[in-house]
Image (cartoon, rainbow, N blue to C red; front, side):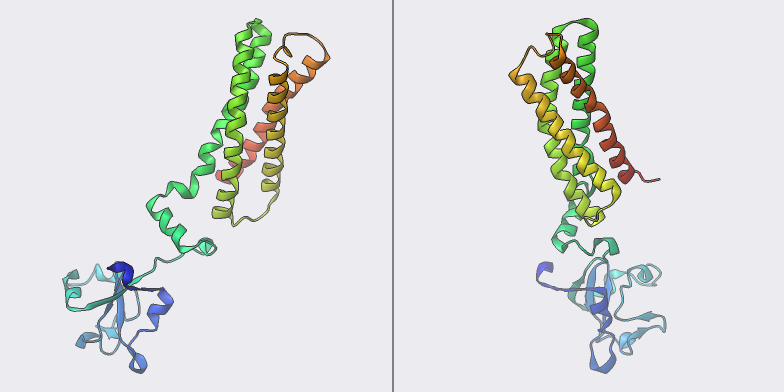
Length: 239
């Protein structure tokens, strides 16, 4: 039933104030009522205090009567929720969705980004442990974790622009530039290492220049993902 009612913005509601033959509307708890027939509202002002064309939800809390008075009046519409100025670029259906599932506004990227960070750091640690212990299963586990990073990183990168648009209006900044460039570089590094290790499973077993280069790229994963994570944290937890 409510879906068929007119949706009033706060500016639209102000037009129905009883002047120039207009009806008298007021809003309470998101519902808009026509109170034109009430003697107490005919002038557009109730008890010389409350103006029509307004949301009186807060004022009503101090009223000497309860919400049962609205049973005498016709509900003509619903009041749209006031928009935050930062949400002007977002469509109504998305704002409604955020009210039902709040996590969709903030969490997709901050949640998914933890996985590639953890996988990348673990890849570096396992390779270092292999060098110290000589136990090959650590190096093999590092390769498997690198594969997990290869799957998780694109997911985090896809959700990033979504949160950037939702919360920052997709505006460019030095922080965003570092995050985008760093993420692309990180993904390229992961792909190179994974394909290299997949094609040459013995790369870490044979000492030489190729092993040294491979290991150098593996170690480079740590500072790259740290920089990307650091600038992401600056956006999520600003000073």
